[in-house]
Length: 398
Image (cartoon, rainbow, N blue to C red; front, side):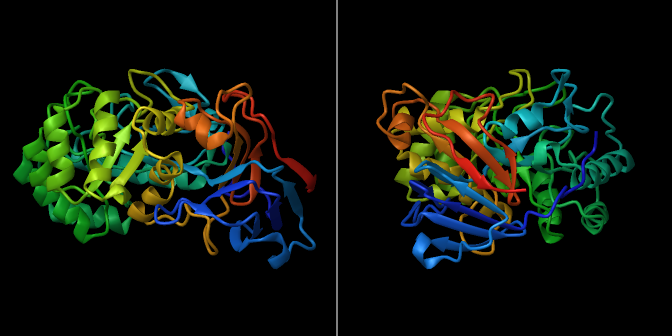
């Protein structure tokens, strides 16, 4: 079942005839360019075709005037082992999500493992195992950044150093374990940060047995790097408290599919009003009781674009460049030196929107015509989205 990190050398890949190029950069969300050149999985040129060297391409893709975006990043998932989730006893959920345009996933804790160890030796071992396993295995080519231990009472600073020394870079949601008090969480978050481990805190009511309410005051006191599912996972804090979190904290504002949709819109709009849209990132918080959402990130983009009245090119940045910058990832932005992870999309057939961006502002998700990870085409027309009006064409390739 496992597959190598890279199954083949991508060689030189050229994407030409791009109709709309979304950059992922919230300061310049649309680029005046129609061509991307990549070599061995890395972007080497972005610009007009006449200014780019497109000769001798191993793979030449005609985008046929469709839209190219950075690969989408799901900032909040709960993987376990391989491409299986015991939460819904479902196989292939990660590969299916790739068909929804997601090329990178970030674990918020491997909490659904049956019999998940809660002793300190066991939780550290699980985190290291998950980090190693997903570093060696990419379902459908998706990069899963896993190994996110759920912190428990009794952990000391040396435990965080041990985790970091072993390659762990994430904490699972603070609050899913026995550490729920703000002061205790703050101490462990600070230890994690000292050793380069990024933290996320559960926000809102309990989601699974053993978790509990994490209210506004605990979130502020703990001061984790990411305010995890600020719109609840599933049950949200009040709109007033969520908006106060946006205002009183400087940390990442994570909005998820498996949360309160009304509060999702309120949080995104609060960030816009506070002039800090760069803090907003998107996740699904799946697999969960709500199931698996292969189109969850696209659905969040459509929700915030249509009902939130936020320009869709900005919302795409929430799901790409914002997350990449906050998480220190070499993807999520279309610029030289970044990973060649792309989604090629067009408006869905028969949408009322005249183009992709307008269709999103009307609430329709786009049709995906191709997903590329590290310069390798991972799928053509998506089996999960509505059919795209136009799809890209591989002119030459292996």
